[in-house]
Image 1 (tube, one colour):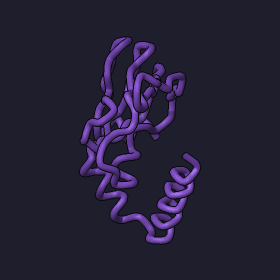
Image 2 (tube, rainbow, N blue to C red):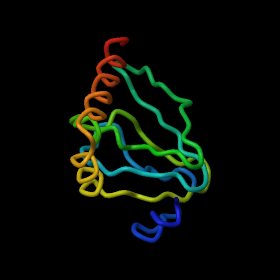
Image 3 (cartoon, rainbow, N blue to C red):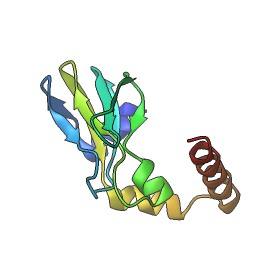
Image 4 (spheres, one colour):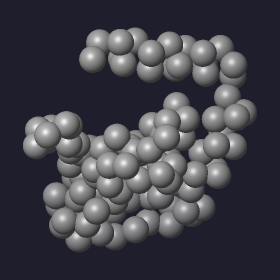
Length: 119
């Protein structure tokens, strides 16, 4: 699966500490982690920070803003190991989301609503 994505989008090789995106960013690109590890963190009101959420090889991340049409990114994504990622441009994601089965879109929107009602 990665080979086909790599052929279309290429692979970015990133050092430790590279900021893939920041909480509050407005972009909607998505990512696939091919190799390495990325930590997600976010700041809440005041000085409270949630850390320790890790993306591991083969996982998709950063698609939340495109998938659910949120205004901005809710997490920081920073490499904690030398990493290789495939960036999927926002326009490509939006094209795929727009072509998605309406029932699946509805199911995902319900999941999103349920997750946010817990907080």
